[in-house]
Length: 436
Image (tube, rainbow, N blue to C red; front, side, top):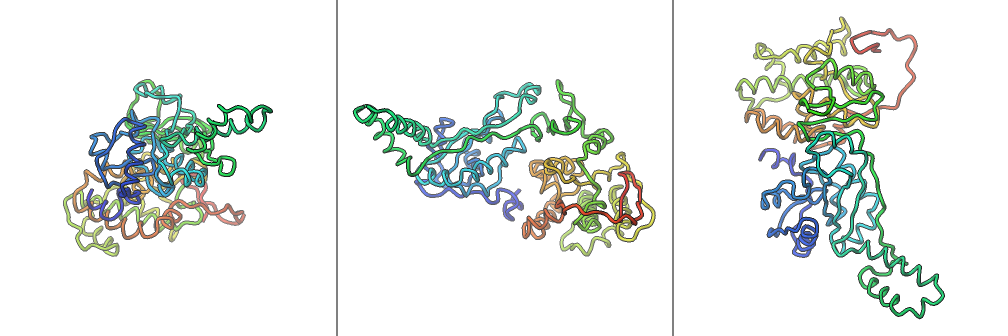
């Protein structure tokens, strides 16, 4: 993994904790949540406050995520919102944490100026040893406070201030006044500077989880269902290796669209890039070195290693030729290994989740796998030969890291719908009527 780390493709954008006061704040929060402390004086944390160095020190990569549910978090700075979420067990967790930070940024900025904020992503499930319990996950709520209870104490102080102002004899209540003074010493003047965090609840009906080999829940879809990597006892799922059933599920729910039909993208260029990735995988998998190979060398490589080219490459080449110059429509059904390479998520709220499914189904497209499903990318990358690791790391650093948002827009962006001219000839393929 050193290649990825050196190029900022793994553990990138983590928040650096190095000063003694920040380390002490972290330790107070860590002890508050887990009863543990770190002896490290320098480490890096993700958006949830998880530090890979501390995970190694404690021998526990889930020290803030016991049983993989109800993830705890430690915030030392609002800048953590820019960090990734490591060891993600649910696809929604980073979005929830980032939205929480952004919605409470001013309050969190004030709170973290003096202390760490510790909290938890709470749902009704604490143990998912039984996969049926995953069906009970409906929403996530956030509970958070400083280690000294500033938010809780501010709420108490606010209530006492209300009592003091509303009750006639409160001026003579020495106990009430004493309590207010004690709380104000901890929280400051809550009448001028209110210290409160918004109560936030997030829907958790459509999501991916790494539990039980990997599950994709689509409970808000027109035809709800669960896609699974493996057979899961106790859950009725559609296995990802049942390509016809998966394709029907995605199509019936309007979750995908063909690349060559999508607006606002260069479908031919994307297909060529997918072909390049497939070719590189085949060549390096056979033990060939790619040192010094450029993107311009791909045709030469394809001619030289024609015996290694898989079926996906040839099918995408035919589709690319059609997209560029017309001719016969290539038949690529859901039985074909290239089928899911020809699709992307349609324009709907769960597009990221669908692209994650497609990345797993079309895993030879290493760029889409990296962008859409990092957990699977890292585990897959670990088993690649060195030549492929080097090529992929260099490519992602040179062509993706330089303009992440631009690359995402080019691959997955959606233009505003336009009224199509009525005099265009429809070309009908396996995915319906396509217009050129």
